[in-house]
Image (tube, rainbow, N blue to C red; front, side, top):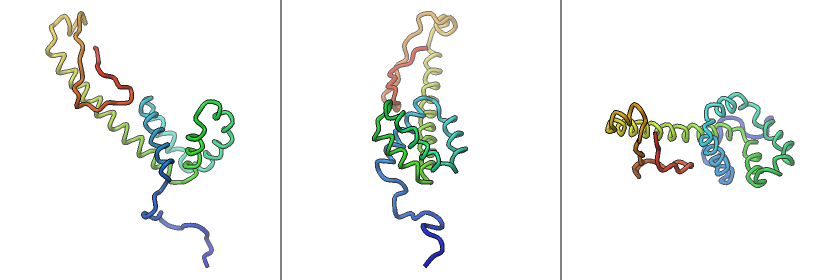
Length: 153
């Protein structure tokens, strides 16, 4: 018989940390945060409120009637249930960082491609911006959620 109830020590690695549908909702949320270019503010906010994740999930219960009119209720309920677990905030942070790093690498490749293409332009296209050609991205670039096919500068 133990004095403490529940698990003491590090989490068990054999069982999944969060359910499958909770992981899918966190994945969706991380993609939206990176798509809106709010990765750094989201990371700062989540790191600062990490110890209060259970209180935050209960606040989500309080605001449920208001949010229910705007958002998909099933995803909101799944997110609330997922955020009750302590490790869910860290998993969300890792997902946001992963997608933000992938977006940064893609943008870095695009900037490099634009720089190479601009060297082929004539002087009036490069310096005056007159009749600038359209730059089409190759197919090997990862497609982001905004499906931007070409960039014009």
